[in-house]
Image 1 (tube, rainbow, N blue to C red):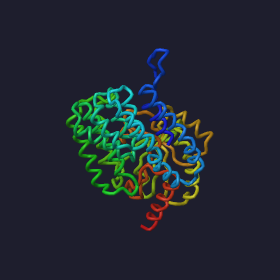
Image 2: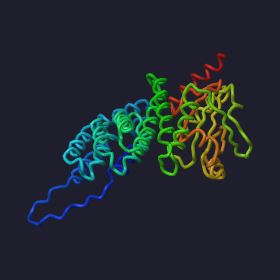
Image 3: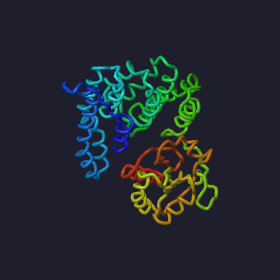
Image 4: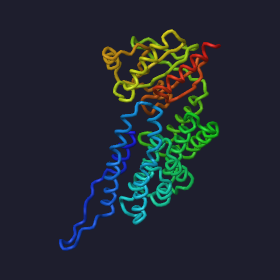
Length: 365
């Protein structure tokens, strides 16, 4: 929730409004941009009771329901932004209005207007790259990416939107209870392969779409739920070589994290409880640290009780962070006793329930 608010507020709507000088004898009318700021102010006020409600809820399922309901609650602000944008689609502030409406209210009308009127905006290519990882469960964002991939006139925009589209579809295929997961994975794979082939030379930050698409294809083909987990070679706190295959026969949770990651640290108390409860069971929790220095991890563990297996990965040129296309922390994989990836991205009670079921399954065989 906080990430969504910060993305929208900082990246999409943060702007300095400069009013045009008006003759002193004429009443000053708010500019297009200033009227948008009023919408933002009302939206920000509406967030406060929602924040309090979210913080008061302890049940994770209820929190998920609250988050899922945010677009509907924010729809009036999104509609107001779209209506304002339509008054002057060429205004410099229009892009921010439409992005705001699409991100906070899942406005498909905003997505359509972005695709048809904002292709020349200097920010839209970077936005397409961002949406693939930041717009989960947003059908409007997916619609924008698909539309631009199919119809954009500029090669660079088609490539970046195709990459974002492949990402968002793949994430959707792996959501718990996803319908037509196999079909969605095929769409994601075919799109990523086309991006690699047809748009590989397009620059994407310090990389190219060829490099990024190749990493994504590895993830789709090797790290999707139902695939056998590839071998992982890392090192423990003493610098000894470790590998994932040595844990075959146990249910394994791979927790790829860093000591500076707030959400990662928030998981520690529950992970402690889970490890204690399953201490005599065929189960292993392996935390793989992305901290730059091993000493940072060691010092953290001296203060924070984390009685399970720890590997240090750091920022190596090769290894699980690069090979597994890790893009955010924590990244969680749940692997069954046969070495098959069964779940991804679970936390809290959902993680514990999934592990319990797999441990029971392992003990029955």
